[in-house]
Image 1 (tube, rainbow, N blue to C red):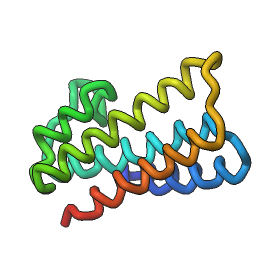
Image 2: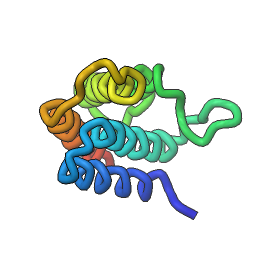
Image 3: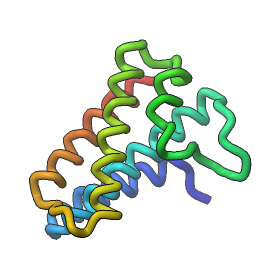
Image 4: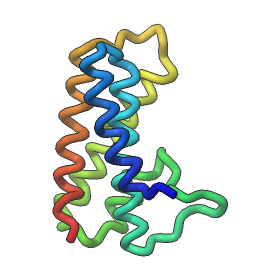
Length: 126
């Protein structure tokens, strides 16, 4: 059985591999899911109840869930993380659902930078 943190590590690694293989859209997708999984682990550690029938939170309200519930982070860090999650989610939606929108190396690199910043904030949780 795998944990949310296992999934976060796998997705982080996959995002970097996909960048190297020039799979820009898939890189953006995996960068978001690395942060989603690590955030879900932190919320579970904080004993936040997940929605009925789900092991993780819904995607759209996740930034607000983090901002209002992840009290193990300082207020500014919680809302900074919430912003990063929102930006990554928006990029993931473009990459996954808007084939007419160009997703290139720049977007993939931006998503990796956002992922690194978000994961760095999550590392502050002890």
